[in-house]
Length: 145
Image 1 (cartoon, helix red, strand yellow):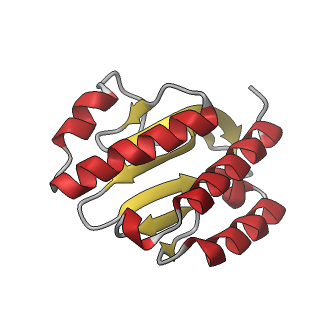
Image 2 (image 1 turned 180 degrees about the horizontal axis):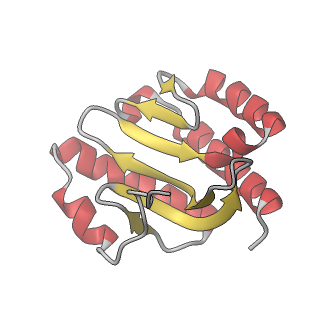
Image 3 (image 1 turned 60 degrees about the vertical axis):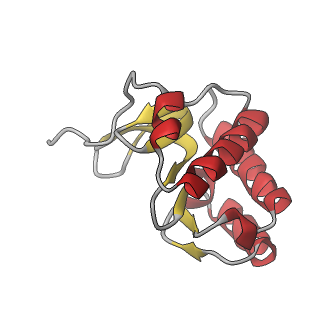
């Protein structure tokens, strides 16, 4: 079985954020990081070269594949910020709650476990914080530390 490409690293989150381009994304990454730290109470860690993760968990898929992944996090990509909300991916009820909150958040798009936002001015940051908090609580329920 192949090794995962996205694994925790020892690279400094602060160095990564300082290098984010363009400047608006860098400044927004600082705001997002502060929200995640506030909600999770966790110091972030880099996962691969570009994902900032808060906490982690391990699980085994039905296929037998063991997974070590971040509980929640984000990546300040050049085009859009990518938010990783695993609670709504791992639990249908949490996914429905997330959808209800997303309807109130503002302009975004979604993937299977990701939410994409072009710029923070497009969304309600209080709703983003509520999504992070709900997702964090769900991951702690599903995968107690």
